[in-house]
Length: 501
Image (cartoon, rainbow, N blue to C red; front, side, top):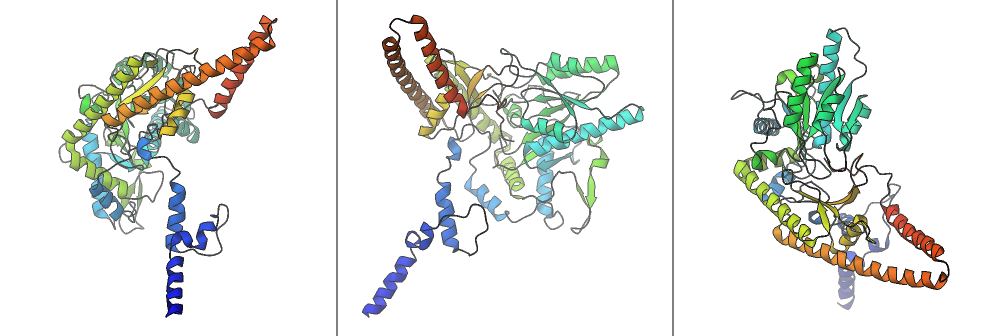
């Protein structure tokens, strides 16, 4: 009996994960391991390492949704093994995508008759959506130039320099010249007048952004449309507009309904929007919709039948999960117009509240706008302080917050700023807590740099009592060295800080 008890006790100990040999075995990093490990060991080891990641809900750098209702989580998990592209096997999932396209296109005032299917497709974020929209513009422009007997090998695209990096990818991957309207230090989005001046006969489209990655500001699509209409009439061209509404597409219709930016403007031919941003779905879904069927060249649509039925497809990839599409449909019917409106109003109210608190400190200049996506972008007023926005960002991490610091796009890269993205799960309480932590960080940095300056002065006085010029030079060297230390972590060579599609 004693022996049996000892064996049972030994088995009990061995069944405890933290008493097993796997706790002292390093994880493979370069080669596939020779032997298997128990499932509970694999789970525990990986889960423990993932604890070192940040808390997604405190990641205020990202526009991407970090919370959904448990009921939607269940729906998405139940569909995690569905491949969306198998339309014949999963016809209901395909129908849900079509319903989402219909709702989003009509939300953006597309030219669709009652009962007709709108033209659009689900994508893996706005990056793929932008690639597809750009390809449609390029092919339409090529067909037009061929019909006129003119060269069609040098297409170009006009944008602001504040565009998301996926536009630069499109231009490079598909051999389209990117003509950028540079920003200025008092105007942080594309100037519509300058954009229209750049348009020529080879311009496939002008891209306007509804919600700049940098400060959340909406570009003036209405003015761009009006100026471009005039130029088209004068030149005989038909240069269209694409609206990159990745961030603002699920914001503007609900809290700025009178703002004209979508298919109400005649030159807007396509719009992309990120379902995983203010569409309120986890990362991995975007949408692109066209004004009408004539805006999407038929030759770009492929038809396949090797999955059991004729299936039209216009995507850059093939297989992809169905979960995010199902999640998007859940949000659209669960919230409806009323629900989205209430959530966006809350986001805007909390963004304005945080803005007011930061303004009251007297230390910050607010760079975001009242009309835009709910983002708070701000920079230090006093640039002579011993600390900068990079240090504030670094020190906020000790409280768990991820608040990015970065420079504006060219030619406003001298502007250094911080940005807080206010999502639906960022409450008034969290806004108050963040403001308190920012104030704590500022007080700590000011105290530290005051001490450093005192020590530096004492050293310089001792070493250079009779050499005032040498003292100034040494002081400059010390401050330059500190500045280089900060910028080693945030190099100037990174000319843009991009958001996530």
